[in-house]
Every structure is written in C-alpha cells, then in structure tokens.
Length: 222
Image 1 (cartoon, one colour):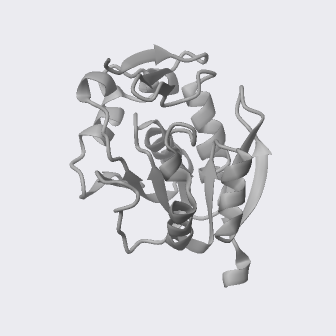
Image 2 (cartoon, rainbow, N blue to C red):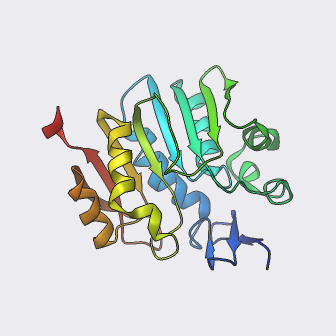
C-alpha cells in the first residue's frame, strides 16, 4: 500500500502512512497542531533576534514553512536544520494545501522541499535551511540549538526514536538555555526525558489532545 493525502479537521492536508498506520499530523488539524506545539510553544516562546532550530522529522515541511512565515513577520533570523531519513515524494508534497490556507505562495513550500540535502540554503534574508537525509542516530553537527522541534511518529509506532539514548543526544545538542517541544505527553516519554537531565514541563495540548511537553535543558549542568 502507498501513502495517501488526507484532509484533517482544520481543512489542512496530512499524509497517511499505511506501513505504520499513522498520519504525519493530528487528524484534528495539521496546521492547528503545528501552530500550537511548535510555533506558539516553541518559536514564539523565545525572546531572541537569532535562533538555531533543529527539527526531528521534516516530513511534509509544514513546521519549517510556518517557522519561515513567522521569521518574516517578526524579523527574527533563523538557522533551521531538519533531519528526515525518509523524504516525502514529490507526488505528495506538490499537492499539499498548506500555503493556500496560511496565505503564502505555493512556491515557498516547494522551495523547502526542492532544496538539495546536506547543504545550507538561504531561503530569505531571515531564514536559512539545512536538510539532512539521515537518521537521528547518525546525525552529526557542530551547531548548538535554541529549540528542538521533536515531531517524529508516535512512540507506539516508532519506539526507537523515543528512547533514552536519543534524548541524551538531543540534550547534548541544545544550548544551556535551550529546550525541546513535542506533541507527546506520554508518561514513559516524560520519565525518559527526566532521566537524561531535562526539566519537563507539561503544557496544554492542541485541539484533540489534553497535553503536550516542553523539556528544558537542566540548569544543574551550567
């Protein structure tokens, strides 16, 4: 079976992956979820003029697209890195309706997807993008990040991405005052984050989900 585009409750598209029986976004609204978890409680929660952001799970490009839009609105410079071991095929990302719903030209989403991998691209004067076609386990960088968008498939579907070894690596990639945000608020995940030193904060979740998680790099290491 092949992937298929589905419409979520806010009218925005997502992609359903039949191999793991899961969508890339919440059925309650792809854009609504991304705006709440990664923009409101990620990008907009930091008062800086320059940010390094790492996204785990580039997927449809929605989080990168929304972040790009916010950089232009708030005049904040973002150095955006994204990890994606299984890129979305052109047949799918060409059909996604995100730009129609947020008031951007379709080419903006295509620019993000068509950028070559492992190279830094200047998308605008405020947004640079480096996509990495690799697994999180193999990912290497000299950059330290202010924010990590952790948007992998759920722990039930992709448990290896939510284990202690992974969160220890992500902890090390953050600046001392950095943090990670994710839609997931499962108890086992929060306990794993705490085990590697994160200060775990539970926040109100997006529509259809009671809670989400923000994990701050512990000040005890400073």
